[in-house]
Length: 77
Image (cartoon, rainbow, N blue to C red; front, side, top):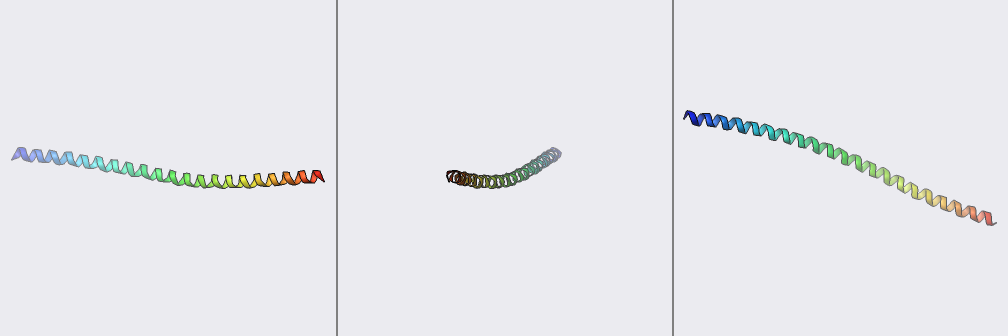
């Protein structure tokens, strides 16, 4: 009976330690997940900014092309 009690206490101690380790791992993983979510949000904002810049670049290229065409037309007159 004493031996069984001692084994039970040891098992409880071991399981309690495992639970603490699992909780720590879980907390660490949750922290990592939050960091990754922040990075994804930042990347989405960066992508949106780059898309806006690319769109404006196309507009400017079109405007330059139009101005060059107008300039050539004026030179011919």
